[in-house]
Image (cartoon, rainbow, N blue to C red):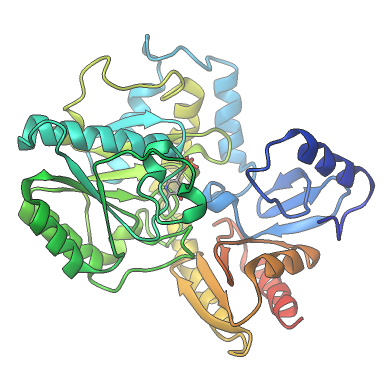
Length: 406
Ligand SMILES: *Cc1c(COP(=O)(O)O)cnc(C)c1O
């Protein structure tokens, strides 16, 4: 684990190993400083960050606009709790709702909390609007899903690592094969009025950047509309510019009933997540029924507003589309003996190796000065920050080429 490290970095990693829970297996890189697409470790080694914190760093490390927005807010007011209003809350909600073409925002902190919010709202909507009998609501999710780590969310995970030994599991979910419209229609047919929502990732990030077949999302939309079911898009990883669009589902011309956002919404500075929807849906909540001490705090809202302002220009989405094409063209040109498949959209790729285990690939990449992360088996995920330049991207892919050729 300490192949490329020396001295103080080894000591720091050992300290984390001795006193931090072992719920992650980090690569042997100890970040000390970062800027844009680059991370510098405790010994001054530089790495090109081609993971970008799973899309939480869409705007790169310490983007000057975001740091400035955070600094301005740090000098004014950072936290009031939702017991009082503050001058960033209304503007943040209004601006994010407008970006999404929706009416209402419910801000939380982590992605998992946005998903939990959606589960609660969909159930309450089912009972109070749709007329589902008490405690009969069902939410449909998909194989290979990743929606977070709470006990309820892992209840409908299909990943044994995420799920096993964490029961008893929360009832009220059904899992359908990702991309299988026929099975979805059959399950909705079987459960009838009990189905309140379909929870779907437009592209499955954790599963290895897996795209559903063309027309799947549009088919889900059609079925949900026809059967009075909420379509909830988890865009926590895929959204906010990552795929070349503000929302990944726009690539299929699909508009859901609710977006779940997180990761990049916090600008790489603070955890900010949100459920963004319409009044008929989010309007079911009354005071006291849901909340969070830190959700929608002034610092989070100030940073979130800057993120929204940056996305409103369309510039980051355009960078992702153009540079993403360059990245995919180069990755698909890698020798077929080394790379079995390249998937993704925009500056987002799952690279499946023929035989090289993903973990080993990432260790080799780190030794070559590139940060990436394996997902499952032979797959690594590339999600460089959208501020990466064409030259930096080419440099990173040159390193990948070197690493996969041994
Ligand atoms: C990361 C992620 C989550 C969970 O977000 P956390 O902030 O880690 O709780 C949920 N859904 C998707 C698609 C994600 O990528």
